[in-house]
Image (tube, rainbow, N blue to C red; front, side, top):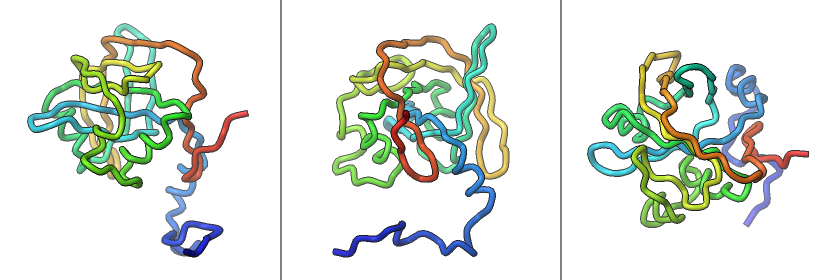
Length: 170
């Protein structure tokens, strides 16, 4: 086994996308979006999220148009959005598709079914949302959802993504 000081499959610096590097320098909280489409539950970690207070309050996110989660959200019109805590890092890696998930991602932790989608059983903070609109922006789908339900408990340290890593806050 070889230990690398950097990611062994990363593009060389001259071939890296400057916009992606710019985006990677924005520290972002990590959310887990889940929905149940026509076939089965789907989930995806999403860091490109914005919450807009108002009547009704909304959450906006950039989703991969090819992701199972996007398909499930478009089919059902609902999703559960969980703000992941630092101790849920492995779950984030699984739903991002960068860690193995024998038997499927939803078998790697306990989940509670809700009207909006599965929520990790140990989730302290999550929202149930209803799809309001979709707009293609660049290579992503910008989804606008109204927030129908919010649970906000505990003071867990949030999971933050910065430059491809999950640094500790403070």
